[in-house]
Amino acid sequence: MPRGALMIIGGAEDKLRKRRILREFVAASGGPEARIAVIPTASSLGDEIVDVYDALFRAEGAAEVIMVRPESRAEAADPERVEQLEKATGIFMTGGNQLKLSAIICGTPVGDAIVAAHERGAVVGGTSAGASIQSSHMLAFGVGGSTPKQRMTQMAAGLGLVPGTVIDQHFEQRNRYGRLLMIVAQSPQLLGIGVDEDTAAVIEDDVLSVVGRGAVTILDPTNITTNAFDAKRSAPLLASGVVLHVLPQGSRFDLVSRVLLPFEARVDPLEAAEIEEAGRDLRQMARDIAAGDASPSVLRRRLRRTRPQPDGDDA
Image (spheres, rainbow, N blue to C red):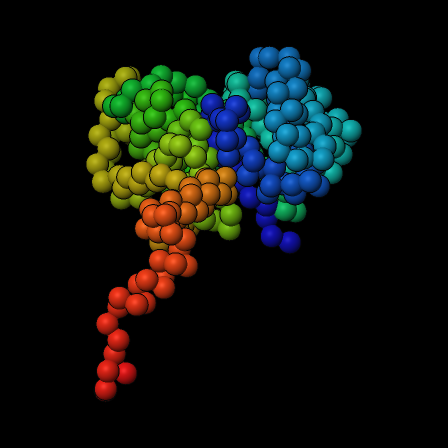
């Protein structure tokens, strides 16, 4: 059975207007047959955070939305919670404190159930903290800034759904280039992935595609030259030779070969319907202007009468 899609959302996804990312998550989870488990462990909010996603997912057609909220590693070993995840067609992890999320679910039966759900074909999505934890190595906390500096961030273990990567979120909005550069300078075997707000990196069969208003930034340090191994304290780091990819909506990137794939523009179905309706209106307007007081059929007859007729060989 093929693995399910991963939806890595950079946070602050649109919940009020088109809701494109959340709509795609519900559709990938089964649409009217979707059974979505929301894991709000990272959030400092109460059950109201689940109420928000419950309303959003049901508005997009999901059949059922349940809450799975372990608040300790003991609760993350609860067989009932594991069983709920085993029945889910989609699992969604909310934003909040990613270190708390990692500390509670990684290496527990609940964490194992999330990985198993992905392996059996369920969609696993997450926003902000729920995005970072999907990588093998997770940025736990740290400061922003464009220049990579020693010790500007710390890492923790992630779920490993995207092996060999480190994922950061709110990327452009919180200026997190420097800390992601620091991580890949210290660990050049990792591919750095930064996801902007209201943007999702969707991964299927090791191909990353981009959906949303922002971009996904990829740092490939395969051939990096760095001094990260002997830089002192908070000194700026040398990071030369890192390959930078900035991928807007519609971009596709092979995570295995680390190359950009041919661009495939994607059009939102709602936008396509609006464009088609506008096109019909414009075509009708053009016909009305051309015809004047006459109908289009009368205009066509007039054009035939005035058009030169072919003769001889031309006929």
